[in-house]
Length: 81
Image (cartoon, rainbow, N blue to C red; front, side, top):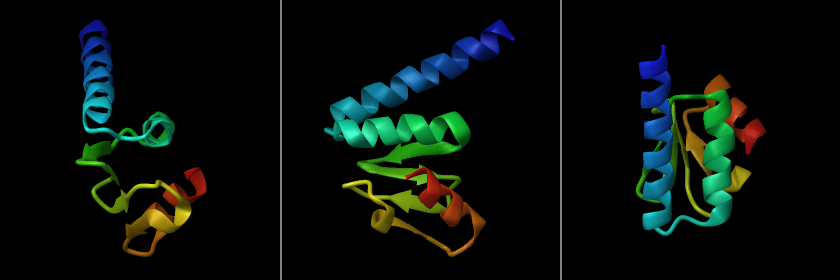
């Protein structure tokens, strides 16, 4: 369990470091962290946030910037945003 927790924390720190180095806004970084608390399957793709390989959130990270196939995943992510 400790090894798994350490791995998860390392991945989170690397994700934060990537966002900073890619020039992602503070709002984008905060949104990523908020989504990640609820949905672990999210990652950065350049400056876009990709959630569950289905929803892409592009800068400036507003509800209208959430793109994906209409469905429960897109609706859930929009509620978080």
